[in-house]
Length: 404
View 1 (cartoon, rainbow, N blue to C red):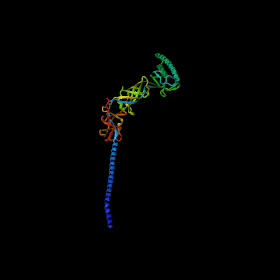
View 2 (view 1 turned 135 degrees about the horizontal axis):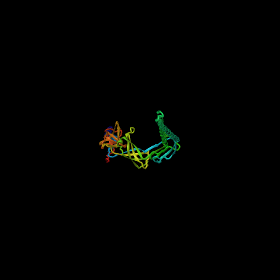
View 3 (view 1 turned 30 degrees about the horizontal axis):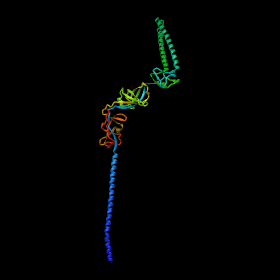
View 4 (view 1 turned 60 degrees about the horizontal axis):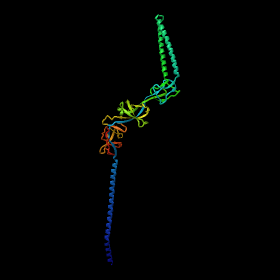
């Protein structure tokens, strides 16, 4: 019985052994699948990280490339417009001073009055001068009387000398006295004429046709002769105006007589006037490096005022250099002693070129050498730009057609 139970137990164990094998096989398979899954996830993560790093490097390299705008130089077949500030002055402008001392008796004109040459402006009361004039007239009468008696005496003594009634010495003395009297008479006449001319300055008159722009006197005011005191009046001839302009040295050679300019005044919008270049100073001011030019503006209608600010526009002929080009002023790179510009080739590589400049037009510059019309020049180049740097052109540069 025991043997039978033992056999049954062994048989039961033999029956259960295949199930255990099956369980072990399933566990191993699951572990293998888990390992494969983990390896796959690790591989995917590594690949994703590599792809992200590659994309980041590409984006970084893409962003490192500078985007620039370019422009083609253009030729100067057209004329140049030069606009400069100007100052307007009257054709004649004279301060009027007194030439005699006294008190202002009356004034007849005020500011804004149009006067003619010789017109009376004011009168001065000079009692001291009047007294000197009367004294000079009396001195002249006395000198004439002395001259008359001296001439008679000299003539008589010459007659006595012919009969040896008097000595030669006495006759010569009488003749010398007559000559002295003649000289005293001339001096008295000259003094009287001087005082009369000085008295004529009691009348202050206009030296030329014009308009009174200043009156600095009034009735009863003490008047001092000469220019030591303030001016009494100022008269300006405004029928023609002088317009002064300081022309930069680069344009000095183009300032020729009879060159015309268009003039505008801020207080008269929409109106233009024509000025003609009359003359220049023929010298460059060392302080400003400019040439002083004088133009004439017709103001027969007297609509323009002296002392005003004006905007003067010249239409200048093109440069005599056939190779001269024009570029925006913001293309220049100042490095060292030379001025350079940055150009871009078809592959986007930068080349720095040294240029020779001509005239400065303000917003544009004239380039005399170092470039060709086919060059693509970078506008507003960054400071970090260097030779052979790769850049991206924002848009194709359109080459403008030359103006006839």
